[in-house]
Length: 157
Image (cartoon, rainbow, N blue to C red; front, side, top):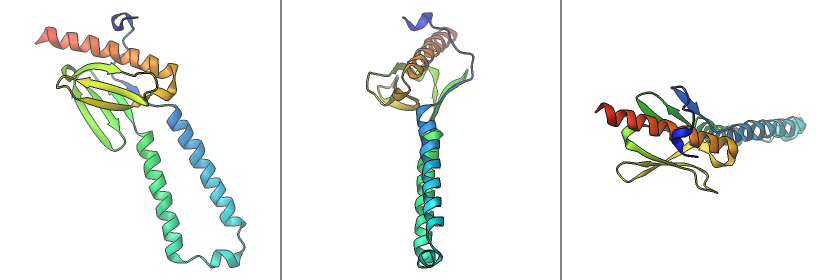
């Protein structure tokens, strides 16, 4: 089905990965519960053997894991009337609509790839291939927005 026949979502519109957030929340919670149960399962003598450095290392590893999870959860693609915003981890890119010439999600690809007018590409991790039908619908919607706004921008200039 051509992108021009797809309904265009109202702007601004945000796409976020679903599976990554669900997996991150459940696996993160499971790790916290397991480590909490293990820690409180130790007797007082075993807990007393941990040094401040070892406890600090555990806290550091927990913060590191949280920062990776947070980077994955904050990934998103935002279509605004004046630009496309792509947030991948801790990096944010703002693209003017004429810069975006293509939206691709090939079979087996982890996330969407945006083709830019200068011949480069940008990964858009906010739409993940692992989300299946939800990702394919998001790609169709984003293509429709790109087609509409690229045409509107070409006609206005």
